[in-house]
Image (cartoon, rainbow, N blue to C red):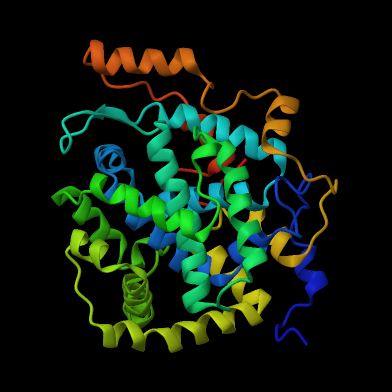
Length: 368
């Protein structure tokens, strides 16, 4: 009935249940949208390419070099963290968010584009990442998946977006909560956006999509998949408004935009109809994210049915709100970089592997 070789029960037996429903739960709209196959590649790649239009964020990414020298594990770690925010248990997700503040404290320095400073924990940059991700996920769900949500569902989706923002250094009152507010958000950001040579280079590095493929994949397999990765690339570009294409220096005709819709919808419909195929694809691209997302996708009940508020969980499990977290360490990093001219400390990177995923490109599946 499911169109798969394994029974649902057999697949469920392969995964541990979450401790609880985290911050959203199965009745949330976000579970439906983020669990759809349109999010795994299309929505994610759209988000992480558009992010680079924030010059401060682009400086942090480009100067860290992580995306280029370990793209597969960087992809997996980021997808796992997004998955934890949506599907993960509350305590583990709070811990991952707390550790990420320490990781981001390393991403500070002088922005060569604006002439100012960049800081990955800056609330404005975190807000840009957050809104860009949530908008990209629903944009691709609408274009290449089931279509638009009902007005009531969409309202709930953006309210859930605001709640999850509390896991970052963002002021939740600045998060848009409607389609109209999201459109206004992007219009307000347009004068602040830039596409430096470095940012365009990163976008063109990510857009072919094959950077997310396993590092040990044979060359012939990459070549065989090129028609599929090309389709994904063109589909992502089809979601960009004209001004973003101009910023990135990308050209694609309206005819190509239209031509990719039907095959992309068909591919996502196939993936959505086959649970085993969906999880196989996720395991192939991001093994770190599977233990987080699989219980939700397969309907495995957690140990507790509680759905937490983010601030409630942070207080209960002993974590500061991210904007206040590790203030002393962050000040120490700023002093090292901006006063002493030293490189920032690496604290947080090793610890993060236990919660967000390994950085070893040869063992991307290792997560504590």
